[in-house]
Image (cartoon, rainbow, N blue to C red; front, side, top):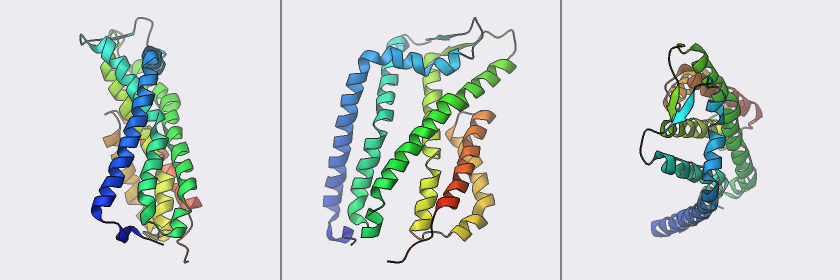
Amino acid sequence: MNDAGEMPLSEHLLELRKRLIRFVMFLGIVFVASLPFNEYIYAYLSNPLLSSLPQDGRLIATQVTSPVLVPIKTAFYAALLACMPILFIEIWGFLKPGLYLHEKKLALPIIISTTILFFMGVAFGFYVATPVIFNFIHTFSPNNILIMTDIGNYLSFMLKLLFAFGIAFEMPIIVNLLIRTGTVSKARLRELRPYLVVLFFILGMLLTPPDMFSQLFLAIPMWMLFELGLLVSKEKTRF
């Protein structure tokens, strides 16, 4: 039964505050635990770029504090990435009281599939997309250019790309929920397919760095995952 209407707004806000504080505390613990390994984390994160650089290419620091702050920031974002399943659980826990019984039964499958798809997206971005993007860029760059990438700019590039892939890979969940809840039908989504494909490419342009290959590597998997969501989703069931 949906009992969201029985809770006043103040209780909803208190519940949201409690869950956010709990997530931030957990994130802080993981972040502190990862600090001793911040240099190793950044070294691992930089592998896709370093492996594609020519022999004289290197990473540099253009700010005075970058050699210290960038690895620490990397440790923080690595902790945030590791805590994403906790965030998904807290979000679902906040929404759950306002759902019907049959919707609550979807909780565990959604949490598991959301987490798996998110990390699949991050892995695809890190192990597949970025090496191809960097190899292409460095292969076609003029020979008289010495490639020296700033470590802070590289961190920003990778974070934007990896989180964009993680979010984009949630497409089957989004499509499944839209269809299951009766928000939109499969037939209607099929009719909207041409417009949605254009939207995926626009999102690829907005969510990734401004190069064509990053956008294609995000937009095309998003389109394929949309089709997968259509294939496996079931229409709304009457209870």
